[in-house]
Length: 123
Image (cartoon, rainbow, N blue to C red):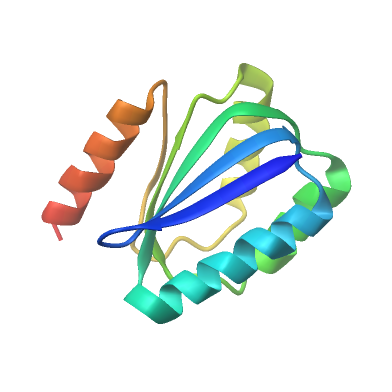
């Protein structure tokens, strides 16, 4: 599994997921998101899921448990997910606290970025 994370201005955490998402990757991702929050405040999450092949049950449980305590994001835009991964991702996201934000799936990165930009302007 290869997980890449970059903090982009003004407040987008861009995550790239490839292969099988393991439990250890979840901790790495949340740790990095928490560091980003300390730098810029509330973040928007942009995730490239085009290379993600699987989210095993133990990993899903870890996301649910770790995600309950993390509410420092406005919006989540996910793109490129294969149908099976999209279904699992959608179910996981419904279990997480969202605060005032929204989560949406998109086919392309351009669509996802456009939505994040427009949603941020509306606030």
